[in-house]
Length: 254
Image (tube, rainbow, N blue to C red):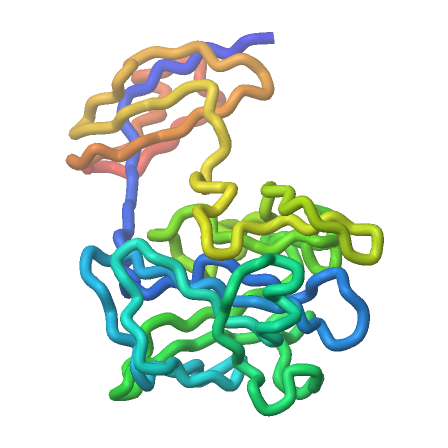
């Protein structure tokens, strides 16, 4: 069965939210090891065009960690981990440690049930704050995370990190197994998922009261992505214009 849609006018509201240039881009909060979760890690990314000196930045919520005198270059990564030596043994990557006094302790770990992660600068200004979770719309054990072996990656570095659907279970097989589970993750590297939207069968560009293309045929189970190019719009589904509509709908002037 096919349905034919004539695309006339639609209301689009787009909110552009600006996030800081310091981004938490990947989290492994429940690796598939038993006991102390010594392979937990948080990946920090500088999404800005200039380096940032992180001296005395700190996690005000989540783990107990104050950044040393280090500059994170533009578009570079920084890893902080629960147990640097254990992490290096598995991932072969040097990282900063958030539990230097007793990395085998379970008192300074990422919560397996979700918690707020918050980074503040030297003046206490919040640079990033959100709560990760383990339930839908966040990635779950069914997708391979939460003890299943996969970290979670933000699907777009400019996306809102507080929205669970903007995080995906990593698809990159790191080539290591622990407790019979493969490790998936991209620590210190580009995320395996870089788009938040799935592949669309049709893409519609929307400008002021204009759709490009104007007419499409959408088959059952196909998807459409709308890309707002700017302008004003409104919805007109009136029976006066479309007599076959079961009822009229619309929102008035643009």
